[in-house]
Image (cartoon, rainbow, N blue to C red; front, side, top):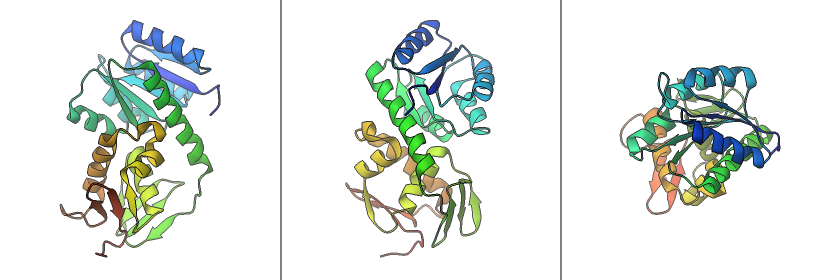
Length: 233
């Protein structure tokens, strides 16, 4: 992780942006701030940050809308901040393309850990094997991030893609909750099982042909098993 990593902080509360800028700058990051979604989108496209931290509730353009707009143009990691704890808000943010979700009030150390984890994953992704996976009903291209299930293209958010890609690299094996959380969200998130549950549910909605899971099977109390051919073992 480069100490010159660029972070864009978006929040309509001046105190929040001031504190985060001071904290992140002290950690060696290059930081810019925006007080609304529209100016943040302009900054994201012009400055090309390595990570975005955005509030969820903002006037004119919400954090959800900003996330969707950024995702149309970039795969930059996005951490969403919100005072709301309802699961539906988390799901909406994650499904819009956010990579992480931190509830206010939050620990600065926790946020810094999430920042480090997301930046490490970006670096690791750049070094991973780019050979497409063609197995069973699936075609997954890590370079173009294209996914086809039974020859039908499926559009996934960045984290949904990362999760599916990791599982596809380890087909027909039981992958524990800890292994999946560590691989996709980093070591700091192994105690955040709700991330995994939300993304598995969202991923199933997009790739499973019916309500009964065919490809991603639950191993009760342990984890999940990915079966690309959709056959029972």
